[in-house]
Figure 1 (cartoon, one colour):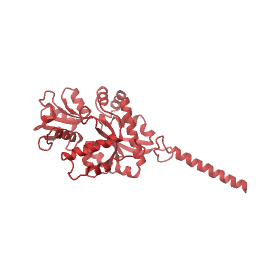
Figure 2: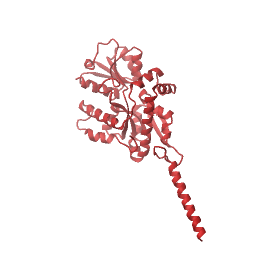
Figure 3: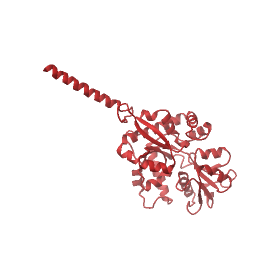
Figure 4: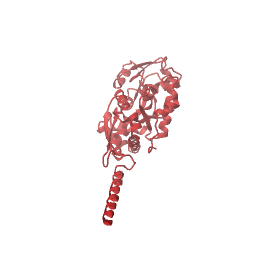
Length: 335
């Protein structure tokens, strides 16, 4: 009887040990849970194909997401589809431009930022021989953009306000597909255009335009994070560990871009994630500040929200502190 009791006790101990071993195997080195021992959590991450999304591509290609316990599918999509997909958790993560998302955030979309990824990536351009030499000179002019409320349009509206120009009354906006902006500027249909890289810098490199203002170079935008890790609100509520794993993967990708800009450029052009040539893309990446920051990201949301409210893009009754608390989420294990 005593021998049988000892055998049962040993079996119980071995079973418990195996269970703890399985739990240990289900965690990666960052502590993110997998769906089961040895299994990766399947998630979808959306992208549009811009140079500023280089951190997503490097995190995917270098296996950073897998090391965080994730089986990632990259999904190319347009912004409107991405908004709906993130809000309904059909896509779990993406790169989000602060100035592009601030209005949808105010309107209550169930999506949030979790970290700042990098600065730079938006330019306002004028023809090479244009007499326009400052943002103030845009008063009375026509500006081509990729849609009302688009990130570059919001950036230019902020720059206009700082120069004493009312973006609603003192300029005219005309929307075109991003790929047509070069042509409309060259034909004189607009006096200036605003768009993101790599298309903006490609136009400059062709000698078709020159920079009027650039978030990568000019203050006060030079130090402000423009692109953020962007996560589905449903995922944040129901599975914050996976949300944290996605965020960490993105931040690791950003750090890798900062340390290997030439290698990154070659990789993402050859893999056809973005258009352009490796030399041009590398030049852009070196001009961005790929130093991810939770504090910096939160500050960027505060800056953008306060300025866009001041110029009338946000509702006058919007409480900025409450908005920021709702749309910037600090996650355990992300720093």
